[in-house]
Amino acid sequence: MSLYRASDVLMKHREVIETRLFSTARTLFDLQETVTLYDLSNTYFEGEAKHNRRARRGRSKEKRSDCPLVTLGLVLDGSGFVRRLQTFAVNVSEPATLASMLAGLATPAGALVVMDAGIATDAKVTWLVEHGYRYLVVRRGGMRQFDETSSVTIETAGEELLHLQKELSPDGKELCLYCHSPNRQLQEEAMLAQSCGRFETGLHPGCTEWPAQHALSHCLGISPRVVLRSGSDQRNAAASG
Image 1: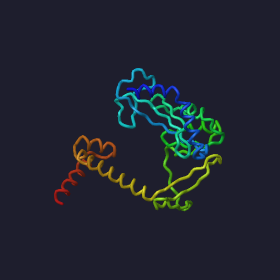
Image 2: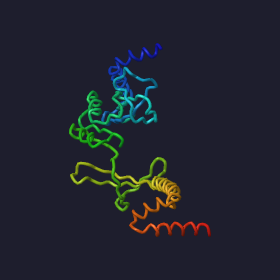
Image 3: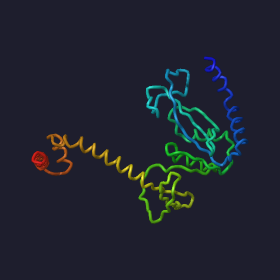
Image 4: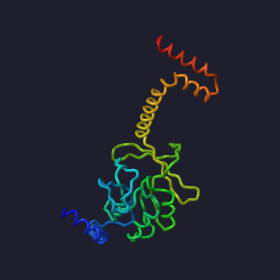
């Protein structure tokens, strides 16, 4: 209980403590302040958290949507040292959260901000550009056909070969780097084949019933008798096999 009460006191001086700790780490390890990593996560309360104005129910990464949640915003430097920690209302994604986190960091103009695809919305990227920040993000949405003829091959520390393709945006303001991993491709193809196999296995028994055959014939624009006969032929072939 004493530790719990002490935590409340420490929380009141959080900003001063964070600033002093990071300043000491920066001095000891000669850290550069050109890279800022920004990420969002959430945590849950076992109780009702009635007195926490930010606690709300929402989508929990720990599958505890039955509990009140708060979002944690974390800013690190390029070496992984924590610079700022702040709590927000659950599932916050507006650029205002990013702005409030970076505002107190005195980050120099032109600093590189790194975010994962989960929070790298167009609005946040636009905000970074408008305020003089550079950014490194995973592009959200859209599939692209990889052109191996225009790529270069590198070997990772784990001795895996990766194919990289660099492409400049039409306006010349954004550089896109496309990465292709043959091992990852094989893994995803195997997962897709497994999912399709399960779907087809579960779908086939239902297609032999009259309501499903009638609906299928309507979608295909053919006579229900053709679908029914096709299903009978398949059953007969299976029986004779």
